[in-house]
Image (cartoon, rainbow, N blue to C red):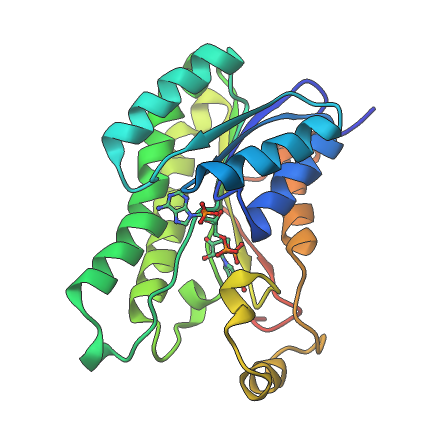
Length: 247
Ligand code: NAP
């Protein structure tokens, strides 16, 4: 028997990178998957890949920062899929820059996507989780939310905020049989890190004891664990997937 047989998962930012890997890993373990991203073509493509694994899939193009759009999408998702068991808030962006040069727009975009986006989705599905007395919430933060990073004040604030948010939610909903945990990746090989040049990568790898960048699948395996029955007694925790960078 597969680890997520019969479960239905919503994954935001499923169009590429880590979110795509989580969607495919969950599908390979027996889950049906709702793929959410900004770009219709990206969520459709990954939904097709989920279907190719023999699972049901739905594709949604939603800006996670738009509370009204998220509310409408959640209603449609619950109508189409009938139920949601697992919610993975993975959609995220960076707008890096030193504090003195960081625009208000770059601050707002990152906070609204990475932090408010998760709030919007958790709020939209909380009622149905409470009603069914079960649910798994997995929020994808970052080691940067734990240790900070020069040039990423907005991103670090969003991810540290996401950790505090998740722990608060975990306490609020624990009595209803719902868990909420955080996966905090280190440096993972995706479009988000593709802009780094070789010198920057070499510099980063000096801080990674395992000596290599992580793969999206490494993060997907951690998300799978937190979504599985094996993690039923774990809530409010941060699971770092970072090659030992933060220990
Ligand atoms: P990515 O390759 O840039 O993909 C980001 C995904 O998020 C895309 O599918 C994108 O949609 C979606 N997205 C972005 N803004 C959105 C919005 N407003 N509404 C809906 N969807 C939105 O990023 P990644 O590297 O896979 O990162 C995934 C998550 O892991 C992020 O939260 C990131 O902060 C976190 N993380 C990444 C790393 C890393 O090293 N890569 C490290 C630590 C944490 P489209 O495809 O439609 O553009």
